[in-house]
Amino acid sequence: MKDTFIRSCEHWSETSRNEMENFYALASIDYKYLAEKFDWKEWLEIHQTNVGERRLKILDVACGSGKFPSALVQYAKLADANLLPIDYALLDPSSFSISEARKVLKFPFTASSEFETTLQEFSCEKDAYDIIWATHALYAVPKCELKDALKRFVSGMSGSGFIAHACEKSHYIKFYKHYLNGFKGGSGEPFSSAEQIVQALKEIGISYRVEKIVYENGLSKNASLQVEGYLQRCIFDDTIGLDAMLKNSSTGPYLENCVKDEQWRFKQEVMLIFLSRT
Image (cartoon, rainbow, N blue to C red; front, top):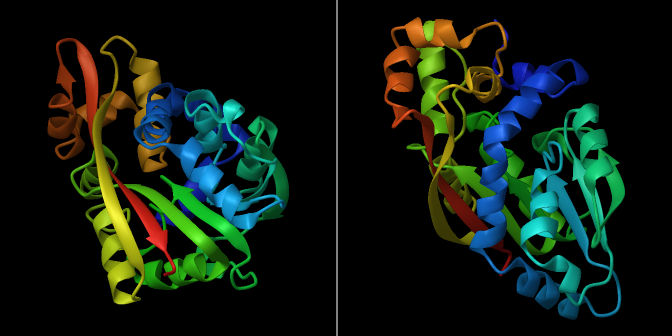
């Protein structure tokens, strides 16, 4: 049986572009909330001051299609920031994702190094990056590999780190569990949750602070094709249509509760985890 990580890699590909675009019809709001929740302009300016007259170096872990830097450019007023161009490194096990992310980068972000690998297999010099971040990026990292992955994450950052990740109560985590129960007989690797990431950080002795955002991904009940694509991407399985999900004894009752006032509403609770080496 193909497990979570393998299927996730297969779905970051050109053949799954339509599904990806349907997913982001709802999921783009994830990055809008991240960009608007925090004063990224000031945060980046402080880091720029700290490094002086050289460029900041950022590593985007599991960069996907570059939705986070795009959201920062759109919503965080970075065009007015006192920043030099930022050397923006892309890490992802999918070459398709790296290519997609590179194409959408805009000032202050300029593409630099590329790493086609997982975080847990990534190797770089200690303190190589001023900032490392991973936004909605670590779901397919198995729980047993989280600590090793986070150790590599922290080892590579000389300044700060940031992880945005869904909590156990979020749609992303809950729906995937229903999928495994309903279509895989309960077998398979569940998505890692924000709570598991925080626990792993505690166990490896890393300082962090947490903020939370709560919101909903929503779309009209009539937008069945987009919702189907969104849900298929949530489980990395395009062999199961919306009708089958609604009829399933595990996913069906869950999805019925996601429809209110003729709207699909998928509740999210996301941890914003800020890391420090000090």
